[in-house]
Length: 321
Length: 120
Image 1 (cartoon, rainbow over the protein chains, first blue to last red):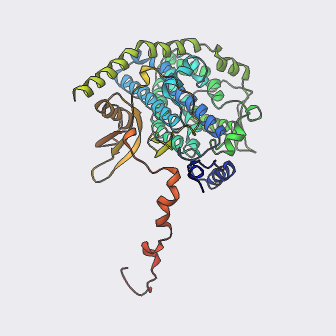
Image 2 (image 1 turned 90 degrees about the horizontal axis):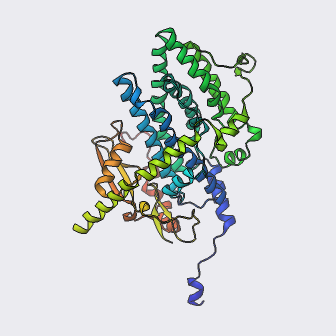
Image 3 (image 1 turned 45 degrees about the horizontal axis):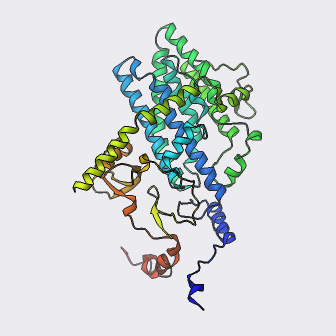
């Protein structure tokens, strides 16, 4: 045997690697970054995790708009903590995306250039302070429905990030609901504000679960890979079933005349979702798309000097050491 | 195969054989990746909690505090540049860990003790 034969790397046996990967998924074990994985699995995860991270970062904006107008120091401190959490969630998720070979700054660039998406929900404006409460209750409530099963996602770093995120989301939802309870015990005008906010956010929150199952081309593969654990429609139904009693306790109604309890199935039936609106918002024509991206772009460009200054300082310290 | 720590979950191959998204090079991508470890409370080990980018060690500690201990999750933080971590590589998986696989006698359950023998 010549030495050149020994030096030549053996070509990886793709079928054997695939079999090992499939067996790991089938056994319910986690895939870790160092494992071989199909290119489609890697790409799907990068897309989903990046989209998720972008949503957390863009999600700071609608509520951040109310930081300076919070009605009390207590509410301001709570809102500040919540917005800071969203930044943290974005960081956990970008870290998870990096384990797949993605580059964080590159992902941000793709977001700003419109090549990657974020949740459609953040393209709606926050018109009154009641919106802050409704976002916590409904939007974060929907996020929890989506995210709790992701704690068991087949990709280890994603699942671990989601566990951290879910621990904090519970605070988000409860602070929102408590805010609304407080407003509902106030004046008729305050109660009307809450109902108005619910009317505006209910349908968009249902759209957060994504297109219906028969129009969700990637879902089946994602479920086979264990990235997703439940279908869009399953999660949406779970969310509706959870939210109706919460609305009753709060004393508000959802803007859906067809919403009714089906004793046979034990689920609430609800009306048809306007998927045309969803498509418009996702493709960049929502009420606030341009504003959200413009602000993210400004944050990147206007603050670039801070990153450069810190880099220069670190280099100087290192040279002096 | 070259390896690098990968967001704190072990190590990941980064050689040319591993396909990754193409990267553009600009100045702001220079901040190194740090792995962060938090001691939850006295009496516990530092445990890996995640990773972040920072320009230097001190900033990494500050950022780790903000990112991982917003709710009293820790009493002490360690950070280390991911590039400074040496890890076992996937290629070595078998020879590296195989020796313990056939040594069942290292576990207490290997030994059968009559039931009437107390405290064992």
